[in-house]
Amino acid sequence: MFKYILQLFVGIFTLLLSTLMARYEGSAITYDSLEWGYSTPFTKLFNIEITSGHDISQLDYFVYAAKFQPLFPAIMMVSVFYILSIVGYYLIKKKPKLAIGFWGVIGSVMLLLSGFIINSSTIGGRVHFWIILVSGIISISVATFVCIRNFKHEVTVGTN
Image (cartoon, helix red, strand yellow):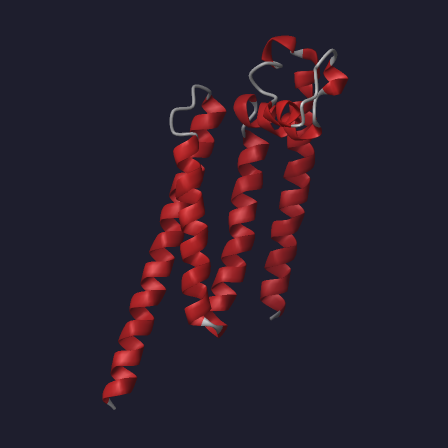
């Protein structure tokens, strides 16, 4: 159990550190008025009119960073997937049937999300597309593997 908690701590620490760095890098949008119309979906969602850079939602900082400075947002995504993987691995060991649903849902959501950014014109969008797509494929593969393993185990237990 200690090894799971330690790995969760490392994953959460990496997520927090990369989140702070991505927020810092994304704050450059306050000075890039040409991007206000293209990189502020959360500000638009909240119906806030941008008259100065200080009107921009903090969430849009992450959008801007993901588009133009993708390193730390990518590390954020990988660390979230790492944290979910630790939880999923623990579930495989303790509750394999629940793990199948867990990995299947994560994989399906990731594949769906990758479809939203498949045609991104920025380097950050393409980087994130591939991270999300590969993570989704890995998750679906793990769900399939656990499902097959459980089916084989139930068949061998049922024949004895």
